[in-house]
Length: 474
Image (tube, rainbow, N blue to C red):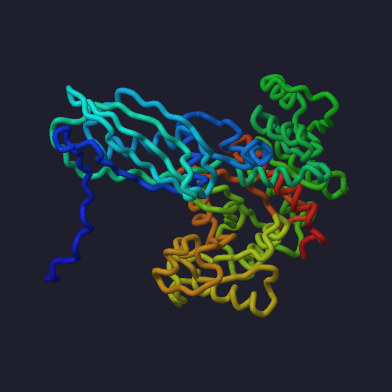
C-alpha cells in the first residue's frame, strides 16, 4: 500500500470586498500592468475596435504618436478592474465614470492604476478619484467614478481565467503567398477539376498569378462545374478526356512533354492520380522515392510545422524514410528555413530493439552524420511532446537542438502521420497545405475539406519549391 500523497496543495486565492461601513475617505487601491501586444489584440477582438492606430504597425509609425498605442478604454477597463476586485470589490454597482485621456500608452509602457475614495454619501454611495500613471510619472488618464458600495461582506475563491491563444488564421500562409508575388506562375495541369470546389481552387490560384492552369478532364463536366460556381472559363485551355483515369494519364503525359511544370489534384481520388504518376513506363518516377509533406499553420505553434509522410508510403522502410526526410528538408529550405530541424518520431526517446521506429530513427540520424541526408539537423527518436514542446523536453532531461523547436516531424508510418495531422487540423484548428515531392514535378494534393486559404497555400508551396529548386530530385 503506497503512502498517501502529502504534497501541499497550492494555496487557494480569494477575492474579498470592503463594505461601505469599512471604507473611509482616503482609502485607496492600486494595480500595475505593462502593455503587451496581446493586450491590444485581445481588446480589439473583444470590442471590435480595429482602429489602425492600435492594430496596424505600418500605419501607426507615421501617425502623431509614431507607434502602436493602447485603446483608450484599455486603461478604463483597468480602473474598472480595481473597483470591482479591490476597492470596494465584489458587489460594487457602477453608477458613473468620467475619464480624461492625457497621454497615450504605448507598447511596453507600465501603468499604475489607482483609485482613491474622495467622498462618502448616503445610501452607500462613494466617489473615487481614478488615475493611471506611467513609468515616467506622467498621468495618462484621470477621472472620477461614482459607485454604490456593497453592504454585505463577500469573500469568494478567485475565478481561474481561461488561457487565451491568439491566432490570425492563415497568417503563416499569408506570408508565404506574399513571397510569391514576384515569382512567375507555374504551368499546371489541373487533373479532373469536375466539381465547383476543386475548379474554384485552381481558378483562384490562377487569378493570383500562382499557376497557369491547363484543365484536364471531361469538358462537359468541367463546364458544368464552372457554371455551378459562377466562373468563366474564357481563355483557359481545356483538354477533353473521357474520364478521370484518362485525365490522370493525360496530365502525366503533359509533364513528360515539358508542357506543364506541376500537377494539381482535382475531384478524382488520390490513388487514381498517383497510379498514373508512379507508372514504371509512362509515369514521373525519379531515383528519389515520392512522399507527401503537410505544411501546417497551427494556432499554438509559432512557425510552420511540416509533417511527413501522411499520404503516399504506408509502411516505409529505412531507405524510403531517407527519401521522405530529404524531400521534407528540401521543401523547408525553399520555404526559407535555413537549417530545418527534423524530429524523427516514435513513442519514446530511447532506442529500443523491440520498437523498429526507434531503430530507424537512430539510423537516420547516423545517415545524416555520414552525409547520406543533407541540409537539415536531425534528432531521434523523439516522442511528439518532446519534439514540439521545450518544456516537455526539459522535463525529461533531453538536451537537443531539435527537441521543442522542430520544423519537421517525420512519423513512423502513414497511419501515424495522417492521424497526427488530422488531429491538429480538427482539434487544434490548424490549416493544412500539402504537396507531393520526389516526382519529376511537384504534385499539389488538395482535399474536399480544405479551406480556400489551404488550397492557395498548396499552390504556393509548388511555386516556391520550383523557384528555389536548383536541380531535379535524384
